[in-house]
Length: 351
Picture 1: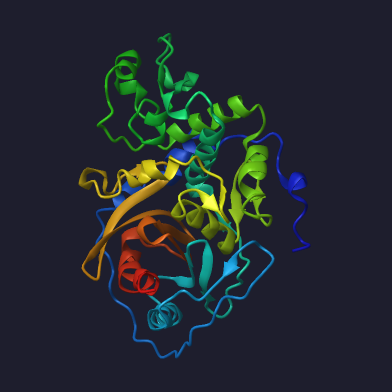
Picture 2 (picture 1 turned 90 degrees about the horizontal axis):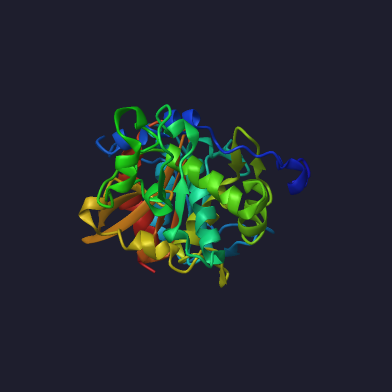
């Protein structure tokens, strides 16, 4: 760990929120992935993996074995033998306890995973933290849109913060096609418009409210409470090791608590859960997560996930469970759902 400088030294005080163009172009492909057909092809496993309890480290994780061992072994054997999905590691958590952590030989467990494509997950999580501190009520706040969202000489426009977080506004992605003032005033609470630039505005608003770079707010209110200290944060990218990324999923799976300490506002995850089994919400993005339903052993489970080039992180609220797959995940997210449905969730649900 000594190769990493102290947190304050490696955080850029001049933090700049991710740019509109990088957010838009790096994230806008995800909605198209929902139409892809899942892959169910695995090579037969020649590996005889026997379940091992994860090794304890000084990173705040409680260690346990609350896992269905046969399914866990099948899951890791698929990981080790399959060459079609680019998998290199799998981690599972339940009720804040790390119950499985395995990697392919040659994969370094402390490899830093880039969140460049999914900074929206960090921004939304920080908004959930700020909601706990916001006496005025975060969801009632109105936000003035940045200048680039206006038509030339057009009037300033405001939109509800909740509309940005739930992707109920596309003011920032298609202003040239519509009249800003009219859209801002109309009721669009039933709409869904995938516009990653919405989260840039949320980040800028949070900085204005906290009066400090978002990196400082994240360090004090998210990273330190979750004992995440091997991260990198600069203007271009945010990175953290697999165990620490799984903590964010585990935090949401536990209704915003970590070791009985409340980190997110008590109704933050409830807002997600309220949409969990709504058919019209499936395949949509809100509060930093994509949403999907999986049928496992005759029962439907809502999952919330975020995918980058080197990871798929998810949480299952009904099981208080977090799931993280690592590797070269070049396929659409839906191609990994059969692995979650057939092995990962059954490994968690039977205990």
